[in-house]
Image (cartoon, rainbow, N blue to C red; front, side):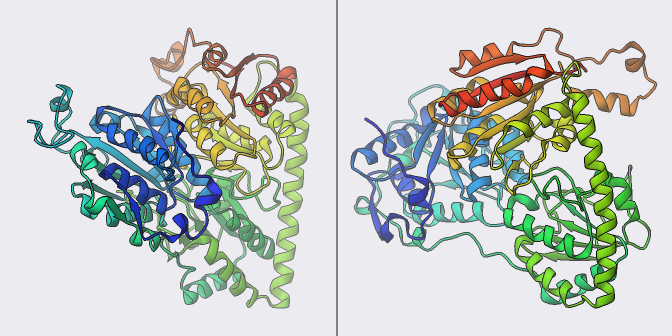
Length: 593
């Protein structure tokens, strides 16, 4: 039986389920699905186990009754399911459901839970747990030996440090309150994952009158965020207006595309330089106030504005000038989940930066005397001239990189820039190659670069599935290191893309090893034995997998690329496959580490 789907457009309206106050539900599992649909959940990314059987049955049974259920995306491995839900949230800002089994399925979510937490991505995780009963007294009671082995003392504790909220679903009569709350918490800024567990007895227990109350779900929405304290914004505007060298430092601000446009307006008005710490696209690549030398700009600044950034600078490498004033616009200025933060801030303002920047621009304009405007204009023109010279230099370099062997990371970015439409979405998990790729990738449109927002690797492949489901009419490209490709469970991710009809292109930056693990050895032991012997244990892939052949085994297009001149044509062939409905992988061979 085909399972009916809930289209994205249906769930994005303000009144899902036509404002029904109740819905039919024969079991707790059916009640959970009805409540999630009413709360706007559109997809369930599922890796099943013996404890998820009631959820699987409910998907089929409700669909057979003509009820709407979340679209099923089967996932061979849990970390792909988590990354897909993360990617979907980045585009839509709507949390989706990830279903895994008990403790082992929870553990297999792996580093992608860390990424969702640090990247502020709303995801609803539902895990089974071992049945409560052992004697068959209740439906769902234990019937396999593994249910004793999987009964750990604190299953929720596996994720407690990584989720905003967690709860064991132990009563059917509270589901109508708990499920909407889970979706609301996941989607409210700062967004993040939530985690629930449920035993089979609860999933199989019938609700009263075989109906579930939807009234709470109909009235539960993500929290409305603040635009910032007007007095604090006025104070910050005064600092910026009088500054001689203002600098903005961005982190995850671009998760709200409208904030990018507002930052550009503010920077253009003041002649304020922008340092980007490489999250999503926070500033268009060609913007004249974008700074390539971040350390120099930070050291010279007399006013620094931190915008949704976790680590604005590395104190061992650079520090702001003594006397520089530091302000912060952030939905989470205290960084409460980071045990040691340690960056000084004179004016922390808790706010949604996409809203606060509007008020800040207005406040700055009130300071715009004729003399100020002239000073800002002169500064803007000076920085713009330097930016134009830098872009001319990059263009000259690119001409030489087109034929340089082995292929350089810079040319990967340049070749993509030549081949991709302006609204393509690039998922960046190229790790140590990221700066080089982005320098030439030349993305301008807000929302056209996304990242995990965290260092947990193995994100971009699964995220490609979720992003493509969220933006089916846009080209989606994942750029990954070879280590990231392996960590991303490519068999599971490419299979999920095929099953979900969500094809995307992947470029594997194949440098033959873990450069991110080689660099600390050289950094801590610059004259050490490893450098002298050119030996870095565990770092190099002496006999790497054939990534293109692996792709072909998973119903995807696969091609190995070694000739830099051929790279643009290979990208176009990969895009042709994607547009024809097939995922594609290009194994791009770089200089070995």
